Structures are given as C-alpha cells and as structure tokens.
Length: 298
Ligand code: HMG
Ligand code: MG
Image (cartoon, rainbow, N blue to C red; front, side):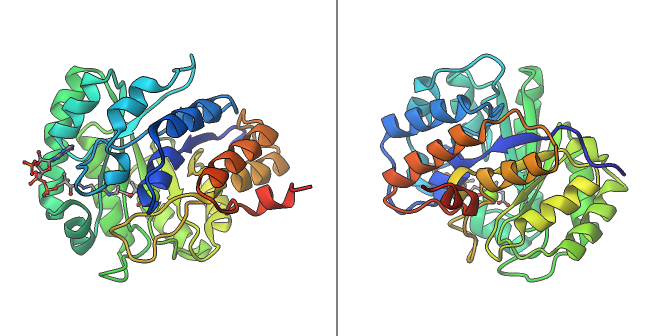
C-alpha cells in the first residue's frame, strides 16, 4: 500500500498532556495554549476530559476551558468522556465531538476506570445512545494495545475484536493506543495487519507514547498500512496517571518534521508549532520533550 499523501494530526496535549502534570495549569493558560495550537494549522484539538475531578483534578476546569476558547472555523474540538455524566457535562458546554475509551486489558480497565472491560463497553453503549441522537462524532480509544503495565502481552486478536465491536456500536474512528510506548515496528505491523483485516485503515488512528523512543518508527509502519490519522502532543507532553511507565506522547513537532521530509501534507506550520511547544514548556518550567523543537533552538 502506498503512503498517504495527507495526514490528519489529532493534537491531544491539552487533555493527554495536561492530565499527567503534577501541577495544575491555570485555566487562562490552557485557553491561550489551545488558541495558539489552532493558529498553527492543526485541525483537531482534544480540548479536555469531562472525567471525574476526583480522578483527574488537573482537568476539573473542563467547562471553563471549553467555553473559554475561541473556536476557529474548520477546527474540530473533541473532548474525552468516560460515562453519561461526562457526556451530559460536555453537551451542556456545546461539545460536538467526543472520545470514549476502553482497553483489552482487564487490569488496566480497573485501574483507569474502576470497572471491567465488559462494564466499560456498557458505559460506552449508554454514551453512544445519546451521542448518536445528537449526531456527535465519536472516536474510541483502545489503550494498552501493544502491551499492558499490569498484564503484559496483549494479543492482536483481542484488540481487533474490541475494535470491531466499537465500530459496530457506532464509533466513527478507533484510535489504537500504545499507552506505555513499548511497541516496536514489527509488533506494530503484526497488530495493524490483524486489526485491518476487520476494520478498514480509514477508520483507524494511532496513538503512540514515546517512552522507549519507538513512536516515529511505529508511525511509519502505520502509514505503510494506510493509516492517515496520527495522535500527537506538542512538546511531547502526555501520559496516563493510571498506567505505570506512561510518559509523553510522540511530539507533534517531531511528527510534522518527519512528514514534511516525506512530502506528506499536514497543513501545520512547523515554526508556529515550535513556538507553542516552547510556550507551554515554559509554563511548566521545563524543556520541550521534542528533539525537533530543541534542534531549532538558536
Ligand atoms: P468512580 O469513582 O467509579 O465513579 O469513577 P462513580 O460513578 O462511582 O462516581 C464517583 C463520583 O464521581 C460521583 O461523585 C460522581 O458523580 C462523580 P460524588 O457522588 O462522589 O460526589 N463522577 C463524575 N464527575 C464528573 N464527571 C464525570 C463523572 N463520573 C462520575 N464524568 C470514572 C469512574 C470513570 C468516572 C473515573 O474512573 C474516571 O473519571 N476515570 C477517568 C480516568 C482518566 O481520565 N484517565 C486518563 C484518560 S485515558 C488515557 O489517558 C488513555 C488515552 O490517552 C489513550 C492511550 O494512551 O492509551 C486516551
Ligand atoms: Mg494517551
């Protein structure tokens, strides 16, 4: 299969990035950050999570953030929801697109959402009932698809079965998450071959955390499999507090640099992106975790 000519980047830093910070970023800074991201040419920005503030206090200001941003025409602003309560809160803010999440790992499901995988699917089914009557676009994340910090190996067949089930339930897109970044290219290829037998690559996205520096190599494999939606996070922010070893997502700057070099369009202005990566890193008092961002330092 040829490589895609254009890739859609899903910027997850305001949610996946900021949920994992020990410090809570002030609401006006989050709003400024998201507005700056939209000005780089990014077309999909995951704004926040309407999850329990007891579980993720860093995102307790989801409503203020969502209502505070300036929505740019042509940009989509999805939010993460774990249950109908999250969906109700999201709808009350005027959200038009959501992301739900589950995992093939029983133990990770318990740690992350306090329920079994079957129960998480029941919650998603409840969310889907409302989402579809409201014509919301729904993405579903599958976490720990290349291995789990608690259960170890996860069989590709298990991932494929769950992905198929989510599509049958009406999810528009499935984002395959390597939550702890342990995947390597051959394993990624085996997973994608298995999943693509049941779900077309047009309905798949990939979500790599870069814990072991494998994300770009794995993304290349995904592109070879016809997957053209890639999740990423400026300055390499990211991680899941309930997955031991989950550090930052692949940095958006690094993905854009690689795709530019391959002649694959993203619509994103790399220079602007670098300056947004520096802005948020400064707020967090650290260097961007993006090799490309650091390389462009004068
Ligand atoms: P629970 O404690 O079992 O829930 O949490 P509960 O239904 O028993 O409710 C407990 C309290 O939370 C109640 O309040 C509810 O009203 C409230 P109280 O009566 O005690 O005052 N509550 C809520 N409040 C606000 N918004 C809500 C909500 N739901 C309940 N939506 C629950 C279950 C699922 C809510 C919790 O476990 C949770 O929020 N988990 C989310 C954890 C999370 O956000 N993890 C990170 C995101 S996933 C990720 O990072 C992976 C990803 O990036 C892909 C990858 O890398 O693989 C997506
Ligand atoms: Mg993640």
